[in-house]
Image (cartoon, rainbow, N blue to C red; front, side, top):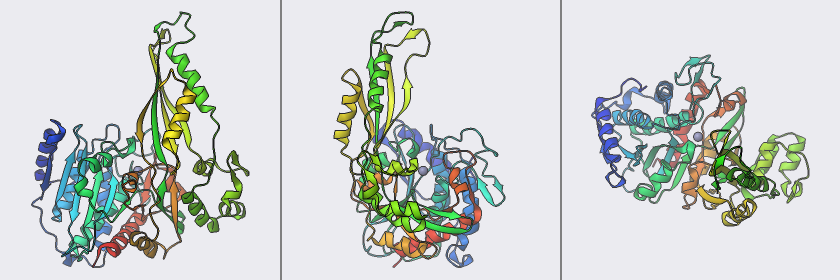
Length: 481
Ligand SMILES: [Zn+2]
């Protein structure tokens, strides 16, 4: 459902573009759409952030009501919703639709006069993971209960998108003189790898991302207990994907047959060798920095381990017991997640396959790891690489875009350069040498964090409003003259 105030102009324009885009990539419609919305002057809005405060919650509610579960995504309605808000502020947008009809939205506020350098990019993904079972409220209702707004995407990551949107709008309304361009991007398809989102955008439209100064994306968060923020994590490095499909072939037939070397049996034997591969542990620089920075805020035992990792992490494993979430930071993980064979118990399939989700540390040699995986699976198994990403260094901490975060958030709690075991669209920038920071202006409690990719995802409206103000301050520090 699209929120109120959705303009007919936008609907019409978007429909035309989507239809054209389906006819082929060379016809991808890239139009600059300026809606004839009314200019809302800045006089009605006082201190920075106040204007967005009430609007922010309303925008998030409407955004949460648009079901962008991926698959299939259907981000075009989310793009239209965001574009409509931008158009009302006379901020032009470009809708970029993939040949498969997946919508990505791009907007740019130009610098006033000669820019001092490349643009700052604010990006978030418009898609969400499917709601799944177990919700106490309708997951696409944007319901507000006890001061918290509920809905799939409330934390991951539509709230961040609204904070970025509110920042664009606020700077425009107040007529802040910009020293560099400010770019807003809402992308499709992040939750299933980003091939139809940022991966596609940056490949097809490199000119839109030429000379980028820095990127703010998802991946960070504040850790709160009640009202107290313990620390802020700003993500500067992450693991990289190596997603594989392993396929075997063999003679198909009746399940009653004698066929010990069937496709399924060969696959199982190969996978068994794969998961028996010894795990190799090592400490990488971004993890050493991350846990070292976290150490002071932990109890005696973790503090001791975090500040002396090289002593406790040996190649064959940690010398002290650790939580799985921590162990994960020292290894390339290999998870067999999907198995496909016959659909009937009495049919031997001619083909069987497995999907394997491998997550590599930042400096892992992907070719060498792939060679080990192929060797373990054996030569009768065909291995295809679905998604991967080259190594990239962590984003620097001596960059003004990182310092601006520390200046704002550091007043509340210490800022820690973090490493994440998942991956985000930031990798597309880092692998091109562009600094990208996982920045969330929201402090989340354990309860808030539990909703991510799970039932009952919700964010406190008060935290949302405060976060929007922080985002505005951080971005203003980066782009204002
Ligand atoms: Zn996300």
